[in-house]
Length: 58
Image (tube, rainbow, N blue to C red; front, side):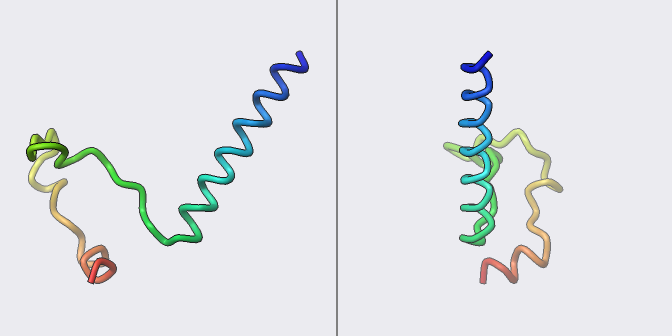
């Protein structure tokens, strides 16, 4: 039981560290749409970037 709790604690710390890293760097998580060679399973409407994202990228 101690190993299970220790493992859960380690995972919790790692997830917390990753979430803090995303929040403090201001970067968003990237999806897989438009991967290698432009083979994209997303529809055209999903590939469009919203106006707020365009302003953020500029």
